Length: 193
Ligand SMILES: Nc1nc2c(ncn2[C@@H]2O[C@H](COP(=O)(O)OP(=O)(O)O)[C@@H](O)[C@H]2O)c(=O)[nH]1
Ligand SMILES: [Mg+2]
Image (cartoon, rainbow, N blue to C red):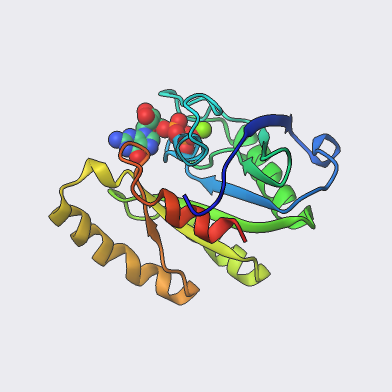
């Protein structure tokens, strides 16, 4: 691992700016559709099985969770998953507010990692998020996860469809799997600064 990960611990959860921890080290935020594999990715890159709860029930994470790496040398921020259809409109709007509030209101935010599923076309919400981050000039990186769910050939053919969608944003995605650990080092390279 290029980044010397020593400790990873839960710092705090927040629903708005009043609940954020005082600004400290640079923060790396993770965003994606609910159930895309965001929590699994954070657990994998921190080498912790249960730092973040992995759920079979989509749409559970309704708070912004902050994690401290190496005694607060770096923070990882797990944003609420979006796009879960079965959630009432009002709740979805409040999640969106939470996500947008954090992404626009945090001076220490360094990188946003947008996570996509290798088996699916990006949703309208995925593309809106990428558009919006691009317009903000926010340093962004894309991770395409669940690569282990496809054969090598299937994965390559999906990547051939996904990559062109990211070219307008000048984004070269990292291919990842929380199951096999594929891409872990590359994620650290992009986020460690
Ligand atoms: N095979 C495989 N399953 C994954 C991977 N990442 C996540 N999952 C599964 O996808 C489901 C949702 O994962 P979770 O991390 O909770 O998604 P989140 O809602 O985005 O935080 C869980 O059943 C995970 O075990 C992966 O890379 N490979
Ligand atoms: Mg989650």
